[in-house]
Amino acid sequence: MTQSTIECPKVVSREQWLTARKELLAKEKQLTRQNDALAAERRNLPWVKVDKEYVFDTPSGKKKLADLFEGRSQLIVYHFMMAPGWPAGCPSCSILGDHIDGNAPHLANRDVTLMAVSRAPLAQIEAFKKRMGWRFKWASSFENEFNCDYHVSFSKEEVAKGEMYYNYKTQKFPSEEAPGASVFYKNEKGEIFHTYSVYARGLEPGMGVYVYLDLTPKGREEAGLPHPMAWVQHHDRYEQDYYAEGAGKEQHAKCAGASCCAGEHKAS
Image 1 (cartoon, rainbow, N blue to C red):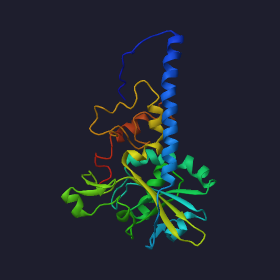
Image 2 (image 1 turned 120 degrees about the vertical axis):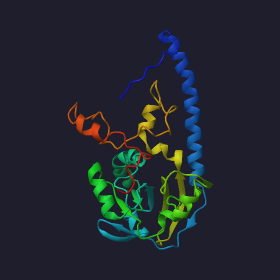
Image 3 (image 1 turned 90 degrees about the horizontal axis):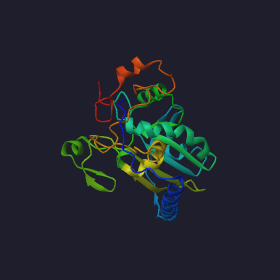
Image 4 (image 1 turned 30 degrees about the vertical axis):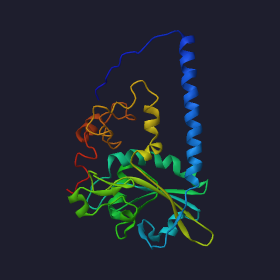
């Protein structure tokens, strides 16, 4: 990994720094209040009843959408980019996947089930999940239209034409799969409602790594990259192994460089 350097913008006394920090804090608090108001507005969106029957493949057998709630009233589905034939899931989705295990048990105790769904067959998902060391629930929508209905999988015709309906508009997207998250509510009658879906940069709150990067002097350092997340790799593909303290560096270096646009998820 090449380390870049930055020029220190200004060196001041502790008192001057504190004055500047308080000015920024006032803006941060304003943004927090705006986010609270936006969250309240999000909760007040109208709902759409889900009448279509979806059956998913899971490690414990076939399950309907209602079963994915696991007895809770709220379900968050992360649309994980992994198509049939891909030997690995998208690295950009995988960095978000690295955050799911830590969140899922807390959400489960707040009446929310958090899980992933991909169009890849279950065996393909399970193999990649084992490699990554993840425990979160992950179902396959290989035999249903769930991904297409929620606009995260595109047909061969759409890919060839280069026009997909994604993030609430028709646009070009460089893959047959796209990331997103959809939220559902199930009432006491068992009726299911789609309450919210978010795509693209709207998914960033689920990636705590960006929260930390935004706190640092260098920030995200993505301005000169081919695309914003070009630096992202699967956590077992970075040259530097954070946990191994130097051990295994050669093994990881051999696999380094794979990204969502570098072909790793194409059929071999």
